[in-house]
Length: 69
View 1 (cartoon, one colour):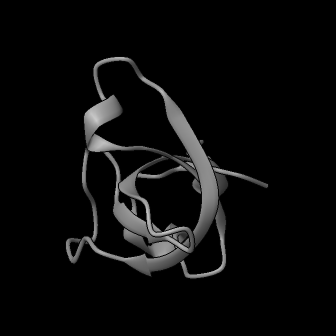
View 2 (cartoon, helix red, strand yellow; view 1 turned 180 degrees about the vertical axis):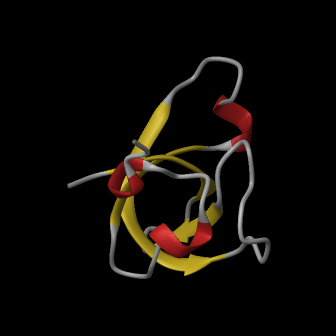
View 3 (cartoon, one colour; view 1 turned 45 degrees about the horizontal axis):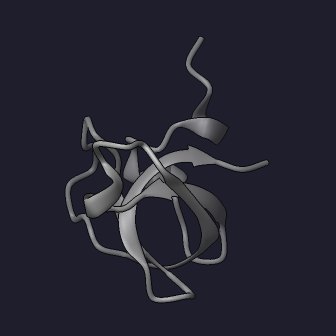
């Protein structure tokens, strides 16, 4: 069974105010992740295989890897 609470590839699982872990473009090779709160969803597609792109309240932009509880 799919775990929608942790799926960062489906847009409908992500909303502003949600705590997430993202990987920024310049950290894709190292895999360094950043935690934050979603301010805005930037991906318009309903599904993206590498993660939905979001802007955090801190201004950082990246693709959602995990949604935190």
